[in-house]
Length: 294
Image 1 (tube, helix red, strand yellow):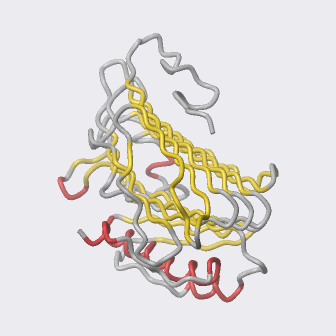
Image 2: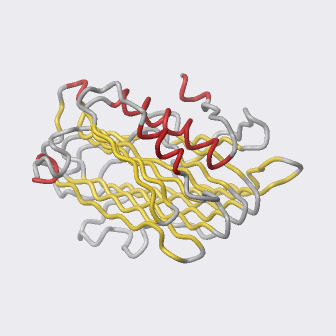
């Protein structure tokens, strides 16, 4: 397991010619011991760490990621490295929404990279709370999940463009999101989306259509094609009357897409989707992390 101090393929200063950075990295290693998953490796650098592991449902290890500054400013680079050993199971979340604040006058990017390796028979649930993109932010996120053998994965990303409750729109800035999912080195899902504030992608009907909340969830590792699960997910409805959502399954990846204007409704929708997916994929009922209830 190697520490990461910058996004893969990029220099620490983001090649912008501005020597401004605050690096933080976190390594987590899990393995199965004495009938449950243990957090056996923990290494952190800078303001990124975890609380103690929790076991609200027995074997599965729940972990809360903490970033004490509360958000990313220009030059921040968070790097998270996760490794799950054979037959281990971890649910990883955050205690509150992440924030990407307004960038500086040089528009130096704010970055987060996640790399997770999931061993045979293991399961990772990556369920962070939403990310709030402040007006003027220059966010960059990368998520790479590497599955081995019959490993299973559930994950999601929810983004709020601006702060609708405070009448703040995302009128300047950008967000680059990259997600890749591999099994035994073979790509199952490769996604890259760059959203510029005020662009056609943000405003036209073929894009976000002016909506300010977007989310995606992914699941992989099903024994057989989950046709009944897809039907059940298509029956879910959002409390947001402006919401749109779509479900697809292809090449062992189940995708849930969501667009709306209310983050609370989006959180509820994805939680309900997780309650449907988890029993089908992991043979476990949903066990809400306690931190979501505070």
